[in-house]
Length: 451
Image 1 (cartoon, helix red, strand yellow):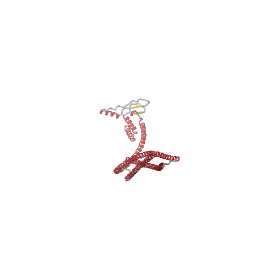
Image 2 (cartoon, rainbow, N blue to C red):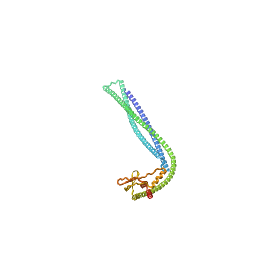
Image 3 (cartoon, helix red, strand yellow):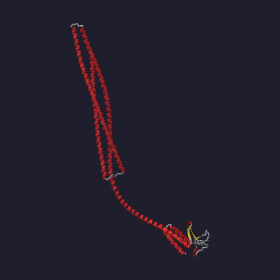
Image 4 (cartoon, rainbow, N blue to C red):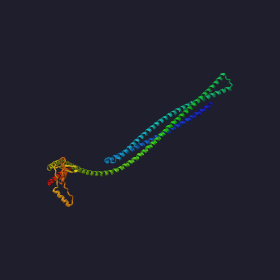
């Protein structure tokens, strides 16, 4: 039974050794695959970053070239010739390009940070791998020590078995010689056999304990291996997700790069179109400048004529002011002359002329009582009128009616004429002094002719 137990323990040790070898190979394979994945991810990230940096440098060079060409064109044309809307649109496009460039730089920095984080995780995993390898070496050393101890015990067991067999042979030989053992020899032999059996049982229990400890160590190693495998799988999944995120970001960067390329092409085409439009605008500007020069000369002549007209108007205004001042003076003189003439007429004729409603003139004289017959001229006029069949001028006579010592007489044709002349004179005073003077002269002539 002891030999069978030893055989089973040896078999289990061989099984543990095979499991440890497989575990070591599996860990080596996992570490190699993980290292390959890390190397591939690092190579892809470095290639993407290199491509991205080259693309950014190319885009920056194209942008600088485009900016320089635009500045050169503006210097050649003497300044910006596009409309305000075009300039605003260009400014907005440039600002958008700067924003996109800043976004690209931000994504590049984020990708670099992610790459650094990936490298840090890789270093952490490499450290954990080294720790596991150290633990594996420790287990292997412990296993080798257990194997050596087991071999030593096997050697001791073999020596014990040999000694026991020799003792048994010796005992058998003594029996054949018919030697009668004494009580002391019997007790000694029995004691020797009991000690050998006790020693074998102790070794058997020790081997069983060693087997149990080896099984426990194997279970612990398997548990740790499962846990490490789960941690490695989690880290591998995380790296796979990071690689997928990096791939997506690279795709976005490629799309952004294509978009920027298309925009640069559109800007180049727009620049060419604007160069053509600038040439057309330059020609139009030259023609407009020529027209502006002609209009400026015409405006100068018109301005000169306007200044001359203003000077003439100012001179006419000064003359009118002088004439108005003279007219005021003439009106004042005329009023004084009319008042003096009216007083002279009243003094000569004794009649006082005052205006009545509706322009009717009333003649007043000192109190008297008589009849005013028609004058010969009025009679001749009536006779001529009857002969011609026209209206006859009735004798305009009025009996004096005493009212407050003043008598009102209806005017004769002569007095009517004089009254009309005076009315004209009074109206002329308010219009023009020349008419006033002429009316006075006419009235004086009429008075002189009538008497």
